[in-house]
Amino acid sequence: MKKTQQFVIILVVVALGYAGWHFKSDLPFIGGEQVAAASKPHNRPPQGVIVSEVFLKELPRILTAVGTAKANESVDITTKVSGIIKSLNFSEGQEISRGAVLVQMDDAEFRANLTESEAERDNRQKLYDRALKLYETKNVPKAQVDLLLSELLASEAKIAADKARISDYVIKAPFPGVLGFREVSVGSLVKPGDVITTLDDTELIKIDFDLPERILAEIRPEQEFQAISVAYPDKVFQGVVGIIATRVDEVTRAVRVRGFVPNEEGLLKPGMFLSIRLQVSIDTDALMVSEEAVVTTINGHHVYAVVEDKAVRTPIEIGRRTRGYVEIIKGLDEDDRVIVEGLQKIKDGSPVSPTLAVLKSEAVSTQ
Image 1 (cartoon, rainbow, N blue to C red):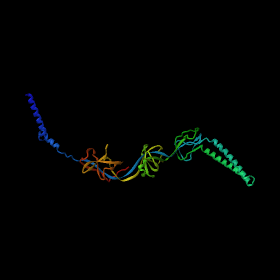
Image 2 (cartoon, rainbow, N blue to C red):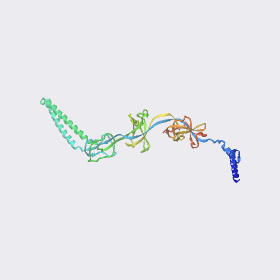
Image 3 (tube, rainbow, N blue to C red):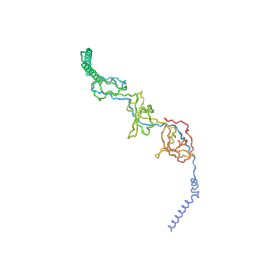
Image 4 (cartoon, helix red, strand yellow):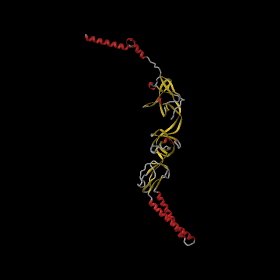
């Protein structure tokens, strides 16, 4: 009997529970009114945002590259003969002019040979002059005169050879410039190939850099460029394109360009690394937008455009950047409005109350 009563009680409880769940919307004492109220659509107020217009702007097309500084002229000062250094007529770091005597080597032996050759020349000159007078009186045959003349000319040639040998023992500056470290001392025995010092003409610096072949048609001599060194981050060196290589590298598909930068202050040194900015053209109708509007994700870039007071997620393709602005290649049109402030509070389709922040007529820095 007790089991039957327990079973009946359980059935009654289950039935009451089912009835309460099924008719809950009609039973105010279990919250039917609150549930009904919550199920009604809720209209949120529009989110206030700041928007900016998309506009056209002149935008320079600038190529960037890295280059290496080289001296306008550079040479290792060496000797082409072996000998003992007699005197060094320069100081390290000295600025010298073209033709200045840098090194005097011991040339005593060749000077003695020159003196002997000059004495021999003088004697043959006298013999030739005497024979020439005798020939005029028919006392000496012409063959004798010709022989003495050839001997005289041979003596002159020997003197010229001796002087050339002596000049090899005097080392002069081939061009004006600045000398480097001294690698030898007075009394040192030097031979061909031994470096005595270096000489660099750095008043004009050459900068070699590579550019891709696809822009070959856009570069030409006399184009101006800017060079920046990590040693002088706040200084911009102005240069011009001088020479464009006649060949394109078959491996890198790049063309070598050589530019020239004045260096009167001597700040740039050969071997320095430089960043190059070369302006090749100006786009007169670049479509620009504030960079604050661009959202970057792993899937690309997008902005939230305002269409009929709603935020619309719009994928875009970006191009060049300038201070505070980004070029739009694809996805927007001129006069479109995009959200620049309040992005964290909206999603695609959110109602918005836009306030214009940047007008199309305002200037944009392109530096």
